[in-house]
Amino acid sequence: MTGRKPAIYLDYNATAPLRPEALAAVNAALAAPHNASSVHSYGRAAHKMIEDARQQVAALVNCPPAQVIFNSGATEGNNTVLKYFAKERILVSAIEHPSVLEAAPASEKIPVDKHGIVDLDALETLLKKNKTALVSVMMVNNETGVIQPVDKISALAKKHGALFHCDAVQAAGKISIDMSPGHIDFLTLSAHKIGGPQGAGALCLGICGITPTLLDGGGQEKKARPGTQNTAAIAGFGAAAATATRDLPPTATHTTKLRDRLENTLCKINKSIVIHSKKAARVPNTTLFSLPGASSETLLMAFDLEGLCLSNGSACASGSVKPSHVLKAMNAESAGTIRVSTGWASTENDIDQFLAAFEKIAARMNRKTVNA
Image (cartoon, rainbow, N blue to C red):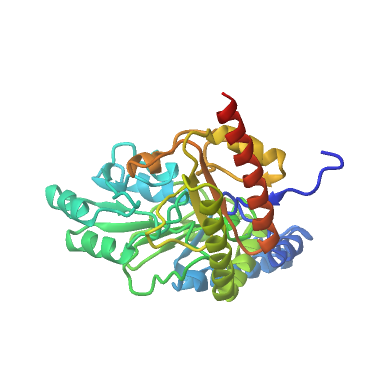
């Protein structure tokens, strides 16, 4: 809108702003007809860009570059893995992203506790019940920011002869990821969650020896993911991965400071606020809170009018505001829920502006309640 100040962006879990390093890599790749399947000089240059990116993404999760398969994003990666095991028994956590839940509609759900952490006893009971081919649990929840005990979950899966798939989209760039111990068989990533371009992602393979495929036709990605590679997006993905790996410690320290200040001040402004999963281990950039008596949709509209970009949770429902299946699984309050997620370009001023807007919105709501 003409004359309106630039919006303050606090929705990094939906998509992170493009990092300058990623933009430079994308522009360099778009400067010429770079098709890695061609044998001429432009094709060879594209091939190098992709292989450089493969090494950068591999370093992000500590796995051999040869075990990184580029694709269009984590939704494709999740579908590739889950549909490969569709005829066998699959267990998935009740709080998974829709790209896991809907890719395996017949899967059995692993419950979580009130903090949003997978119930390990319930998981083992399920594993003992029948032979299981695959267990799928995300490393970090996209709504609450809760970090799952993936080492323990994987150990239980392996103990009972199952493979382990982990959607690590919300973990990348926020906490360290290490595939080297071999506890993760399939791991999915998405470029735009770490400041890379949309339209690129990766399926990283462990040591199980299985390469799930979803598409047929063409020899790209060693036939694991055929189709002309998106050279520009992949190059940007690599640049974002390299930067996220390098900047992980200072970014984590910075976002932790922002989150703690945000949550402490929110609770002072309105003592009825519920910070979800506050007592659980969380990534430092995410706060999911509920304001009892409020509507998520009304709050989002009010914040938008104040120039703040937020969400009420998952950004996978085409902009709709729906009750959270994550909070339902936790038996938690879901009305009036807002998610604040920060990242590499977030500032103290962003939090100042959010808190000032919230105080104004909360005061307005209180006046309406009193006058009702």
